[in-house]
View (cartoon, rainbow, N blue to C red):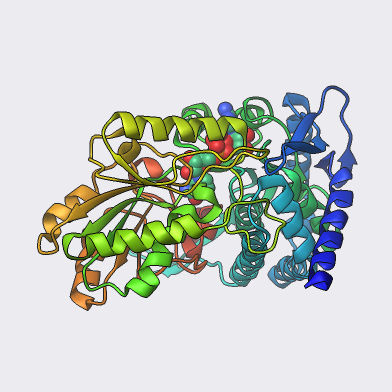
Length: 497
Ligand code: NAD
């Protein structure tokens, strides 16, 4: 035990030493320092400053977009055999895998997530890159039977869109960044990445590994800075062909408005308020931890968090007792400690926002079953919180809280239509979860639920399945064939002979 503790302590010391060097932009294959006030990076578990990143703005963004454009136009990138591009991506995945513990430790220090969670997310990132690498040699068009008079050969190709701007949030920075980056590169785009200012470090570490993997200079560029400066400059830049954004719905809407000027292609992965339906026949041994970790995992800072829970009348009391029990036993603490299940929220501001929602829940008449407070001491922690007696018109049911707060309602098992209407009663439509052992219930609900993903009896990220949202949860899909095609433009060719 002592040995394991000391190995972990050493790992986190190594991670801290690495962080000290993650303070520059990566543009055109060069690490560029910047004058002026840097942005402090804060460890949300102890509120200490752990790093400083450069506050890039229009000038750095312009350099990065030009570097990405030059790299895209270079004959060696255009003519690079697909197998070589695939190999580069696979090499990057191998380098990340070899460095997974340290990357996870950096993520834990930067974002606050428990180390085991971060380690799982790095494993997921490796899988995403390998999955996308597999598309490099499979992305093709089709031949088309022609009807115009004469002899014609008609076919389509999937051309890379060009320079892709990748703008990512802080809640799962490394996994989201690797997924976007590898899809864009698989399609043949070059990229400018803008990490989230609240958790930028693993994006910079990734750039070091991109360099080590041997990607040509300028194919991957990273500019750090505030969303309103570096992010906005990237969105406005005429040299950007595609914006792939993950973040809040409000920011996504602004980006879409900005993109109209030059009709940039835009993919948006936005907020959610996902419904969870637990039927009376559900396997409760699995459903209780599944539902709990679906909202308390990563302290609820998950776009697809199951934050609106509907439980069948017949099992309501039994299920809620078990769920409250499970929640109360979750250990809160700094992510580097063994056995911690929930880390802090990302910032003081986020904690205040979440506690504001808890107050709204109480004010509007929901009953607090467990949690609801912020433990005293350092770190932006909030207890796992469950409200029962929630109603569809309450703020805690309507708005995305992005914290460990679950709002619970009950339903009568027989009435699928009313249940589906309640589950679909949201401006969002990212994910939905169903717990049942009945095949007919599973299929009926999968059909009725208006969400980009429906998961029955479990969760998890499968990169071969498209991921994205209905309604205000987004535009377009990541992962699967659609996710790579989102970085391409279709070209139709007709050749007379
Ligand atoms: P955010 O919108 O505040 O920021 C996201 C990114 O956009 C950051 O890099 C930020 O710097 C940048 N940004 C901010 N303002 C900008 C502007 N005006 N122009 C360009 N870029 C700008 O979101 P957040 O608080 O970092 O993330 C939380 C949100 O992300 C939640 O709503 C969550 O649901 C959503 N999210 C969605 C998914 C998904 O796949 N659907 C995944 C994770 C998170």
